[in-house]
Amino acid sequence: MSALDGLEVRRTTTAQQLADGLAERIMAGAFGPGHRLRESAIAAELGVARNTIREAVRILELTGLVRYEVNRGAVVIAPTPEVVEALYTARERLETAAAARTPRPEQLDAITEAFEELCEAASTGEVRAIVDRDLAFHQAIVAVLDSTRLDEFYAALTKELRFYLTVLSKSETPDEVVAQHRLILDAIRVGDRDRAVAEIRAHIDTSVEQLEQLLDARG
Amino acid sequence: MSALDGLEVRRTTTAQQLADGLAERIMAGAFGPGHRLRESAIAAELGVARNTIREAVRILELTGLVRYEVNRGAVVIAPTPEVVEALYTARERLETAAAARTPRPEQLDAITEAFEELCEAASTGEVRAIVDRDLAFHQAIVAVLDSTRLDEFYAALTKELRFYLTVLSKSETPDEVVAQHRLILDAIRVGDRDRAVAEIRAHIDTSVEQLEQLLDARG
DNA sequence: TAACCGAAACTGTAGTACAGTTCAACTGTA
DNA sequence: TACAGTTGAACTGTACTACAGTTTCGGTTA
Image 1 (cartoon, rainbow over the protein chains, first blue to last red):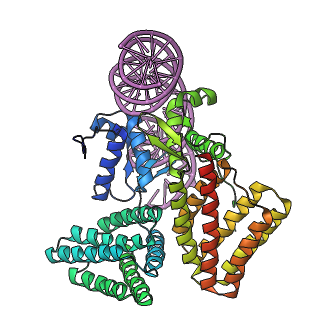
Image 2 (cartoon, chains in turn green, blue, orange, purple):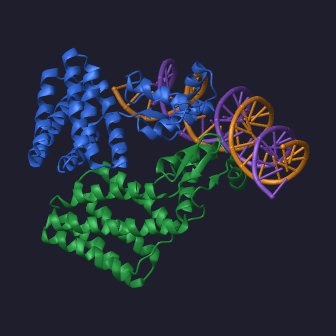
Image 3 (spheres, rainbow over the protein chains, first blue to last red):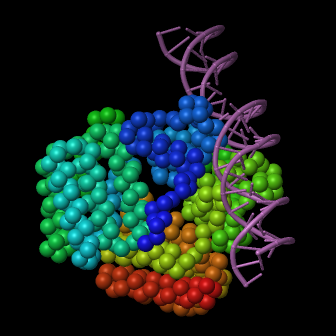
């Protein structure tokens, strides 16, 4: 334990900070889906060079929140039924694969803890917190796969999904959310892997269905 | 079937083309792991602006072949034992998850076909072609998961792996390769999912072991 | 041998410029 | 009125220049 522990120099580039900031804004719904990020406007507003903005947006592309179109620049991703379904299919495959494994004790603890935090958040009724805890619970399940690469990939899916949930302002009653997740947790804790897989599948099915209804209502 | 099918204008930017070209070179082993991509040098040699190279390298970062270090620019990724193991763990999870499912007939056909092409390649003895077919076979297995997002993710893993195999110039005898994959294929065709999972696990275990030996020998 | 130092090389960022593309408003025509 | 054609402003893609700060490396000194 050195006296210098925790001391760190700010080791990041302007572009990286801009990318982080933009990502935050986008996730918060400041730019809707399909919105074009205009370089010169942003550069002027933030007082940086267009070069730097371009680079920031390229970094942003890594997180999947925007994609580039030739001669149109960066565009905020938009949820289409196909995209949402693909997203949930990937989630379902990963989570059920995880549920089919036997979690180590500390993994089981992590899942249980995530559930408890979800319950807490549900009791406050804060939509944003509930969604976060909801996603964290699922992330804890995927962690049973014991693969950091898959953890990261799943986190990326989650980030994208988080954005869609925001722009579609989807929300369920907190009680329902807790109830559904309790079923999953119980199945995992009891060690009934088939039931755990089935519960996850059901949970995801209802989610994707609800989202697609929302999309239809908009489209 | 329109009369315009297949007609396409060249719709790509200079940066994108540069990124593609660089990726190809890197995959072919032109730049070793840890190699720094010096912007001005590349820009001068190719007759483009440094801006454009920077952008190209950011695009390249998307594919995972390079990563950025502050004030050092882009560096070609390097295989460490941890990285290789993480790579194979992710592969193992995805492939076994796929093997635990029942493939649709056309998926089974695709896997079988991939195997036959692997055999063909093995008979020619061309290392490069064998590795390609090998990876394509596994990709066909993952396709059983029916998720384009996971297909893409797996393809990215494969790309990275392909690079490591190149720089480590790993090679096995073609007969061994074919034999191992035949075991996997048979288990899948027979519908014995537990055995398929076990065979894949064994196959990947031996691969990762061999690679780590190679890494130690270099280390 | 190892710590130190200074110059060279390189990155990160700013700023300017311009050709080519997109897009929406405007114009003329059937 | 509906629609094709035209025009111009806004924007992207790319090039070039410049410079401060960082890294690298070879030589120098302790």
